Length: 361
Image (cartoon, rainbow, N blue to C red; front, side):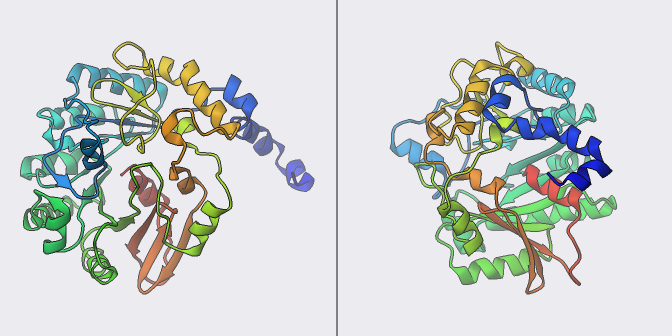
């Protein structure tokens, strides 16, 4: 601690003490951090069979999870309780295609009616038809749309999807946003590294970054939860230097369609946390539970086997890599697990609220 800075502004240091303590074993045992983000899974079903999707791996292992949709009553209770806790962000997807849920529009409107959250979700956009676009433009802070390249590549990777349909839905959404003179929802295209060529990926970024707010290129996870980090040497060096603390258990909760709870979007097989279910417990009680405390304590003690899927996971790297740069007409943000490309000129900084909306999706 710099003593001069402390004497000039002692309160800023005093206020920061709890934040630093929470990352220690003492904090994991005795302090409850603020829950900032809740991801809710309307359904784990999907109409596509994408070649890189983890559900394909699970199907091959004969571990296919039961498919279902979330009860609207459960959804509304989660939203009510999240609002009471001061949660800042709600994500309306997890492993499935959220637009399959027959009450998705009602769910989105209900969440936004609380005027308490930034709301975002990811979708394949095949089902992002006009009436859903209207609701999204009115109620969403951000939307992530999955596209894997141009037509031939996209339809090869995202089996069952139509590039032309998705493209038209993206353009219609942008046009509706413009007609209302809005900057939201923040529209991001998600491309996950698979069988695309580097040349096509670059052309895809060049084309779509002129239409949407951001193009994000994601690293692909292996079936053992490990990640191929290949964006730049900074990311590689962070991973090679040894594992660091994952922040997810300190700010994030995911609730699956049947009420089960998990700590991370990288719980690919949806094991969940044993004994925790939003049908039987409040969000507050889940967040304060001994199960969550045990996960945080394991992290602070550098024991990455609680839960088991943490063992090989590389998702932690995104909390320790944040590199902004400007090159070839783009402003980029690299967090190790993905690279975001924004059109930016003259070295303009990306507004913090844009980065926040982007982080939701």
